[in-house]
Length: 252
Ligand code: PEP
Image (cartoon, rainbow, N blue to C red; front, side, top):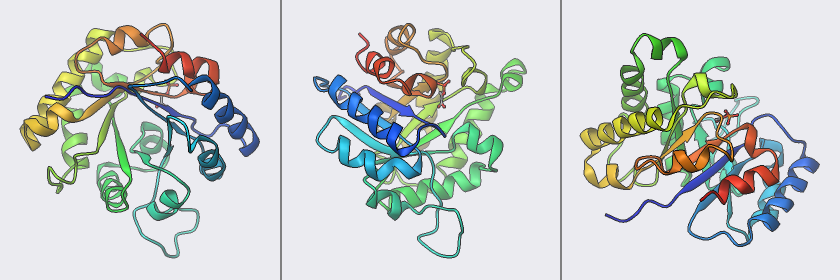
């Protein structure tokens, strides 16, 4: 089985104007110029995608979007299509982030449509799943994740999913400063990999990258990445500062 390439992804959320995004990405290109053997992505807000795309084009950094709408085009005021993201230079798109599920009504059905639309447009979906604190305390973690993954990926073939990335982001760890312990992350990542194996076979379960997200910082990334089933990190707050994000990418 080929080794899975570590993937460090930054989600800028609703931070940075175009000029701030340009400045941050210019600094990142310099700071990360020697990076080899890792995939790196930044996901700026929609307004800055095209400008950032021009800056990172020749670098090791790829561009991602934070969301999309599943229709190709039409009267959908305020929405962004997969092709629009592709034309702005995106390679990846984050789908089903817990903030979208919590504030904007994304659910397993709409997430499934978004994953399909992304794949059809040649984008790589990063499917986010995760349990709330209450669900963890009531021992529902695995059943919640089981449903999110099965519904999110319902109707796809093994071939459809060969590029897809999963991000495990426990809600209680996002933006709270509370990180899952490396043992908690490993336990869930192993569960998710076994679920993928059951649903789609061991070829996909062996190659699929499962990222951990939730208050990842330079001082906890190494121990998380040392876990056998943690293949990378989806980073929110700590991805906004170029020095901090480059430290995360250069963990060892
Ligand atoms: C996220 O938004 O995906 C995230 C993990 O945020 P933070 O790193 O700030 O917890």
